[in-house]
Length: 128
Image (tube, rainbow, N blue to C red):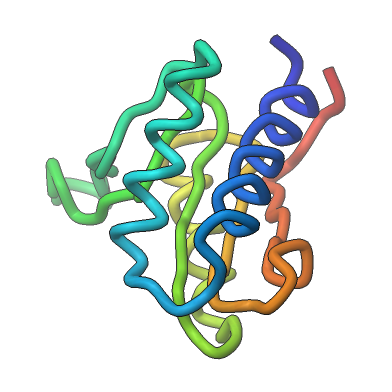
């Protein structure tokens, strides 16, 4: 499955959930629903994916966690907040670098229209 197909499926599932539930719930509720929708559509989803951190002789096996890793290739960070903060983008980009992945999605379910709360973050992206 191509990267753009995966991200389109994730965004489509997010929009479906948001249209049904609307803004105002906890991040964990949206994340659980997104996992359900993605798995229902046949996509492989890992929840709370550990992200190891290696710096010279220091290794932290689980320094960080990504909300979701879809099809071993796209990190999804679910948010439920007024607006994105620059640290949200920096965090996702760091996760992409540490896992050596190219594409991540920030999804803020507290927007009135979900498409206004979706941000695609890339790390040395090469179109497939």
